Amino acid sequence: MHDERFPGLRRRGFLAATTGAAALALAGCGGGTDDKTDSGSGGTPKRGGRLRAAFAGGGASETLDPHLAGLFADVARAKALYDKLADYDADLSASPRLAAAWQSNKTLDRWQVTLREAAFHDGRPVTAEDVLYSYRRIADPKQAFRAKASLEPIDLDASRATGERTVEFVLKRPTAEFPNVLAAFGAYIVPENATGTDFDRRPIGSGPFRFVSFAPGRSAVFRRHEDYWDGAPHLDELEFVVANEESARVNALLAGQVEYAHELDPTTARAHEGRGQIEIVRLRNSAMQAFCMKTDRPPFDDRRVREAFFLIADRKELVDGALSGAGEAGNDLFGKGYEYYADGLPQRAQDLDRARALLKRAGAEKLKVTLDTSAVAAGFTEAAGIFRDQAAKAGVTIDVRMGSKDSYWSDILDSGTLCCYRSGAMPIEAHISQRLLTDSTTNATRWRHKDFDALYQQAQSTRDKTERAAVYERMQRRLYAEGGFLVWGFADWILGTARKVRGVETKAPANTLDWARFDKVWLA
Image (cartoon, rainbow, N blue to C red):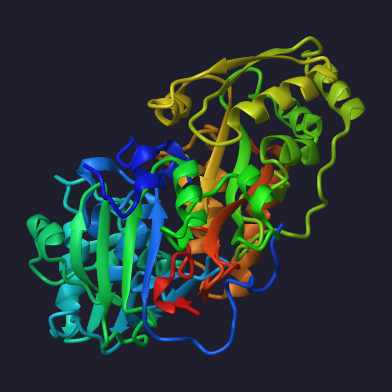
């Protein structure tokens, strides 16, 4: 089971098991320039050629069913073949895609969505019935499709097509941020009556590339869709190659066996940046890095202890040590640089004297805490060791406990008191709804406050965006003061490309529209 065209990939384990870092899990994901890199610019786009992109994959069980997309490789392939009604811009605001426009009623519980004129690869127009079929398939209670939870606000029995290209979505409650639902991860539009067996044999979407071939765990080849509604891709063909080890992806890129390598380590980036052989692309603010404190149990049920831990952290030391400098300091809030982020709050700095005073007032002068970590994500074990040493300076003893890579995310959701945590990009509204409401299913900090829930409902019922932003800021100010997430950093997501690759966007965090946007890439 190997491909003779990629001997370096075969040697490094072409079909090795995927790593946790490649997964786009809900509980945790997942230096460059401010503008395009040399690989991202370069004059007039040139038509033609095949680009080979190396990703970590999922082995022989891989599928092209877009509603099952869970790994970065799955999502990149899905967005090449399919479209969503909307997708996320770099600031995680929703941008129209197959939806040309949307409009709500006054009470924000009915939304009219108008589709643009677009066609599937077999020439059939994309219709309102295709949209409703896709969403009802995702919401099937017998299935575990990725976007199911995101579509929960929609009453799909009451929603209906009001024309060939118009849909009326009836919602269960007011939802001001309904466009975020349309942009939800995995909410791809497929043709009406498409079934599971269709997706791997002859998948038909409305995306920029058509299906050619697929070998699960090995490769997928797609060809330019000339009639794509957003303009035909520059490339003739796009091939996804599976290479699970980071060293395999780098070696393939250096050897000219691929032109794009996804998910590189910071040490690799430092070794090759500016050397002229390959280009390094850093996608800023792609992954929140944090320690998660359980606010419903000792010692973190005392807000003074939580505040002390905020002040124990030396964020620069954590970014430098755990992320090898490939990121920037956090300020105990999710979503730096995203829409609605409360960027007016003062940057928190280490203050060991104040931390000790707070601990003394809380009766926790000689506090001992267990910090759960795992090799499930890059930098977790390093961050745990660094924070243990920082805490010791405030008189806190931290016992670092290593957890299983296979069960870490489910283990830390309910058990323990303090753990290492990370999250990929999503709207701040989605982060709140999924992780910080009383009934949120991935509420790892056990932050449960009815008045906080009420503020979220107030935001979702507020039509005026400025007024809505003020409510979100009020919520974030409370989290900054007494929340359970000690957000110490935001990691770069690092890509490598051949020098001849152009059009790679450098301002798109992983999971957003312009990440892995191969229809806009060309070969010089």
